Length: 296
Ligand SMILES: [Zn+2]
Image (tube, rainbow, N blue to C red; front, side, top):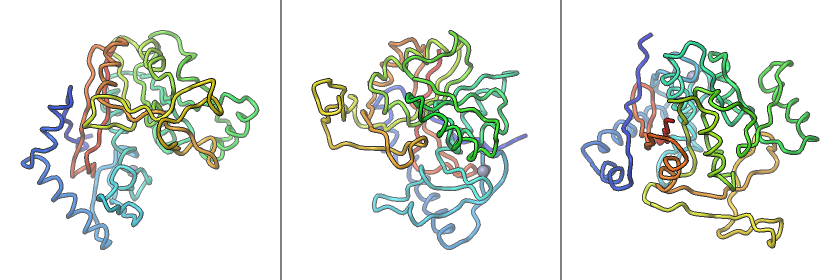
C-alpha cells in the first residue's frame, strides 16, 4: 500500500516553531491550497483525500459550523465522506499507523474508549486498548451500555483507568495515544510518569492538548484546593470540554499548555520530545495541526 503521507515538521522550541510559522514561503502556499479546497467543498465540488482513519479514498466534507471568524476550523471539521472522521482523528490515526507498522502485534493504549477514534482504530488494530475515567462504580454499567450501543458490540466492556495510577504492567505498551485528555488531569505530571512507566523502551507517546505555541509557560486555569467550593479554585473563568461518558455534563479544563510541557516530558523520562506539525493536500490535513511526540 502506497498511501500518501502527511508532511511532518518537528520542533523542539518556541522560537524555532514561531519563525517557521511566520515564514510565508512555507505557510503562504498552504493557506492558498486550503482556501481553494474550502471554496470547492463549500460549493459541493469533490475534493478527494486519502483517509488514514478508515484506510482508503474518500471525499472531504464541508460543514457551515466550521466557518469561524478566525478562519475555518479544520481541526474539528474536515469530515471524511466514508467514515466521518474529522481532521484531528484522521491525523492521529495516521501517526499511529505509521508508528506501529513495523511491530508484529503492537499493544496500543488510548486514553479514550467511547469515541470515534477508538471505534475506527479497533477495526484494524487488534492490540488496541481503550479506557475512560469513570471513578464512580455506579456509573460504569451505564457507560458500558452506552459503549456497547455505540460500538454495535454487545460483548464490549468498558475499561476504567485513572491516568495517575494506570493498571498496566511496567513496559507493557508499544504506543500510548492521549488526545485532549491531559488538560483535565490536575496532577498531569503524575500521568506523564505513568505513561513513561507503562511504555516499552523506545515506545512512543502521541499527545494532543490545548497548546499555546507562543507561550513558554503553561496557563493554569484551575487548581485543586480543599478550602475552595467543590475543592477547586478557578483562576480563570471555568472552561468545560465534552465528556463522552457524561454527555449532559462536561469536564473541567485545568490547563492550556505551553512549551514547558515538552521540558516536563523530558524530565519525566522521555529521551526525545518534539512538537510535530503535519500538513498535506493528499490527506487533507489542513490548518496548523500539532501533535506532541515523545519517545522513551
Ligand atoms: Zn475515512
